[in-house]
Length: 209
Image (cartoon, rainbow, N blue to C red; front, top):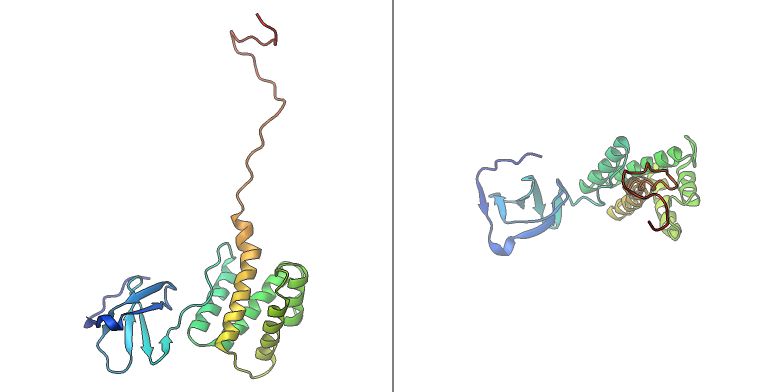
């Protein structure tokens, strides 16, 4: 993201300096620069120069939940980013449904489920195949139930619902893609028993001269 050239901005008083998580670049920052507006206030990220609007206790865009996971296929990475940014924008139901799509994709790719099965089947099969760690059953059960509500009924998801499912997806992507991709390549094994050509002037026998 290129830096923006903001005009007519003014430094706010020191007591109004506000630390926050930038909803554009995702980093923790603190800004004391804002355009002179009447309602609410805007902070300009000192790292990416993008604006964040504050009014009351509301931040737009909100902080981005989760973290970037490395080694993820492009299409899955884009869906994951979309789910995170939807949650940051307050579109929690859209975020939950996008996370469901990711879980379905991984289950089919890892051949623990087939296309067209229920979301419950995808989650249970991922858990049974140990792509989700032991001990996450209660957490998965909660997310599974809330996910079904979002898919089969008009039920709005909350911020907590979206962030919980993003956390589960983050963990799954790290286990399935990031950790395997980060394993160092094995070192070449030394060649044993190889015959070397005798060098001139170097004794080849084991006895004393």
